[in-house]
View 1 (cartoon, each protein chain N blue to C red):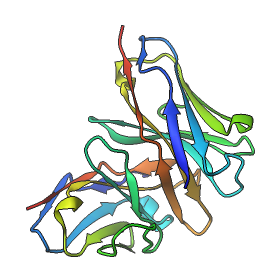
View 2 (spheres, one colour):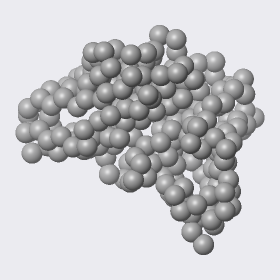
View 3 (cartoon, each protein chain N blue to C red):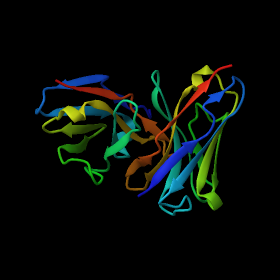
Amino acid sequence: SSELTQDPSVSVAFGQTVKITCQGDSLRAYYASWYQQKPGQAPILVIFGKNNRPSGIPDRFSGSTSGDTASLTIAGAQAEDEADYYCSSRDYNGNHLGVFGGGTKLTVL
Amino acid sequence: QVQLQESGPGLVKPSETLSLTCSVSGDSVNSDNFYWSWIRQTPEKGLEWIAYVYKSGSTRYNPSLKSRVTISMDTSNNQFSLSLSSVTAADTAVYYCARDYFDSSGLTWFDPWGQGTLVTVSS
């Protein structure tokens, strides 16, 4: 299957650590990439590869993978981290088709 | 820095063809390193990858849309385009273009994205 599964919503207390997960067979062949999307804005890349952050992304964002599950961790969540987070990868069959998870709404309490 | 900008009609009638163009600045669509993708978003289905094009003319399509979609590249204007035929209300979405990367090591990402354009299918 090329589907990616995410929990629809997660909450975290301000300043605490939260992990958002993404599960799918394609993650055994491709690293997940992670995107943050705030209302009315386009998604932005926050993590790619084994654990890489684009320029400008705070180091409280990190990524990891174990088997068919990728995780995005935010250490010391800030109010501005409240957003939707999407994982993405490619299809498992080697056709390089793009695939996205359903997204996780993160609430910072 | 690299910027992408979508353009095209915001309203399309049912059964007609949706056509969008993505203008790229700060990079070349003729790049050896990148693919160029269209992605759409609806509240119901979230983000949905539609298609990519590479400078060689290589294309790939989402199987669920393949029969209705064409993606193409205009290197002279540093643009790439999307055409989606026989649209219905279900094609109402925000359409994004994005620079796309993947390689044999398993590395893949979309960055940057255009700001997105809302296309409504309605008579």
